[in-house]
Length: 384
Image (tube, rainbow, N blue to C red; front, side):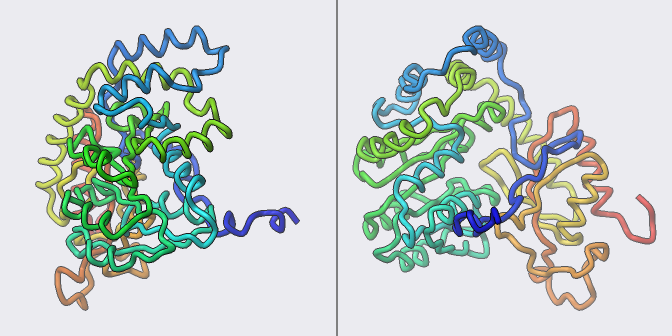
């Protein structure tokens, strides 16, 4: 009975898509969070904000917006603060997409772009990245038609971790496209690559940012949109009408204080470099360089589902990349039989899937590396 009441667009969404329940593992590396905790000053700001927790948060986020405008060297009216960048993506879809409009997104990439569009009844054009995960600019441009309203590009990309676009790519797209080009720069503080400066010349360019991972605020959820003031005014009409108190007071206070220092980010980058060097020493995998808070690992001798399950047995959670549309080139019917079969003709055809792994705390790093080695070098005739 209830099912008959549900919008068909909702039915098109995958069930239990991202998480079924919070991970119970000792070492959580499936979400790409910053393992370095916030500074003492941020902790103090959080504690101070609790004194006024009985009051609604500032619906204009005025102090935070002023600080973000100064940090990004843009105007106050160019910013919309959101409850994480996920809400920013959903807000863009709610504001600009009609039923049967189209969006273009890439695959493999962050699935929320696709799901937000499906919720609004829009159609999704997915452009596959090149084999080396580089950006297929000509393919994308040739896919643009009059019904395409939004193009979503993650830069750097999730889960591949690489920067996809350059200025020439962006200008080539905007020369042919009058809809919104949305660049998701949620890892900007790690890669320091942005195309924010182009907004003054292109009114249909939108930048997404997040403080959840780079600033260690994932549990509070802070994101924001930077765009032309006309785009912002329409976004605010939706957000201010439906969710005026969407950004809680603790999150606003913590984000404001976090902008004063990049100490947490610098500590994370140091830990990340150390983890990367240790990952590269492991045989049987290819580790892709990353501009994000995680690494993409290509498996040469084990199945990705098998790796995920085995790591969970040792208290480590990672992400299986099938959720991103990144499938293995050779799919095993039996996940227990994880060694390369004799029928495999080349190393390129013997990719058994991909996993995405976050950066562990320094105290856990050696354990994670040793368990990865143990599983990768395991044969079924022996016991782990």
